[in-house]
Image (tube, rainbow, N blue to C red; front, side):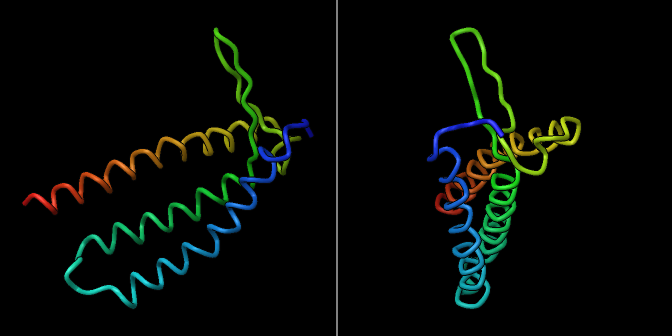
Length: 120
């Protein structure tokens, strides 16, 4: 285990637990309480909530640290099930970093969809 600040270690866990509570509630509300007028947007909201749950799982299972300076940076696993196995840990860390870029892509899709829906 590599020592990192307590908030870098515990904040993702706390917010991940919050995500496991809030996103199923969002899915329930979208499926049961939303009006038929929102149509395909309902699917987008459900996909977004499921992605957030998967992202939270990845963040809790693969805690990472980042160290950098003016010339570059390094990303490393700080603890967890993949800490002792570098081959699998590399794939888990790549998966977690991929979730970061996927979250930006989903946000862009979300806002482009809303923009198109408003101005059609």
